[in-house]
Length: 293
Image (cartoon, rainbow, N blue to C red; front, top):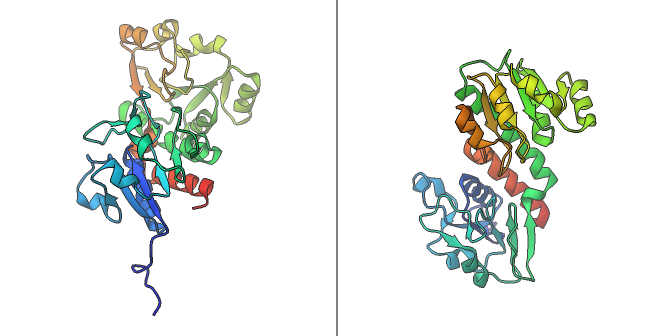
């Protein structure tokens, strides 16, 4: 008698520790692939139906025991002391994780800045090019959702500055243009400005930032260094909005912004907030590719 899908043995156990709804969705995706998934540190999540198909472990040790893969969140840690676990009812110390790991276990984490003990096969999925490209699209969609929700004008016809022309800046600028916005990219490199012009966008250096700020409706910042200074902030129209997409420390002088009464929206971790299922599937795909799962 052949095994039915319900009777098949799992391909192996995966422990998903901490994180936000992306990690829960990643666990579900691995479960669909045929793995037995145990999660820990995801306590403040909807109702019991949210955990259909996966097992909610009672302890860190239970979750990690015999797991072939330990999936950690993005970012792995915010303070270098605890695993990032915003949905946990208690803090999970990194040092409590190490003694429970086995050398044969594979480790996957996002922004794996903290050092793991020697002998572990670790993969930083946030450093993966495929992850970065797919995650950028989810970030752009989240940024647009915030812009639509938080501003009294349409994107169509709005005068918008996109500061920085990296992966997210490129996707964001062209998407805004397709929605009918008047988009100007602020970029340091002449090649980036030329590329922006070739795509039907404005492309200007930081020397033009001040004059452009005086007539813009909205700024999206993607540069993680202070480029939106007090001088820029003082030139902005009173009802202009700045949406911060850059990782800490960000690109806005927040003290000056507060003094000027500028409407600044911090928009970090957008894929986890606006599209956790897609974001979780992206993590699952990248980790599966890396380890051949």
